[in-house]
Amino acid sequence: MELAALGCVAIFVPLPWSAGGEQLAQARWLAARGSAVVIEQNMLTKERLLNTVHMIVNSYDGYKKAAEKLARNIPRNGAKCIADEIRSLV
Image (cartoon, rainbow, N blue to C red):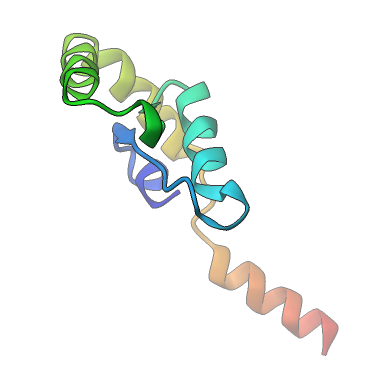
């Protein structure tokens, strides 16, 4: 989500053993919004990675536009929200 907040285009190769599959889920979420591509580790080859890099380079403007649009919608006040919630509970 840090990359999303910064408006970065990315290629994700999530760890297949991550607890609960959260890396894959988050990477797919970003890919579904057009700012990233996901290559699952068991499908990763040097050819696939190179083809993916070429695909992104050739369509970079679209990926970057999607990433910047997404970045505008990522909340930046998480610490304040948590602190406010704690105060309301205390």
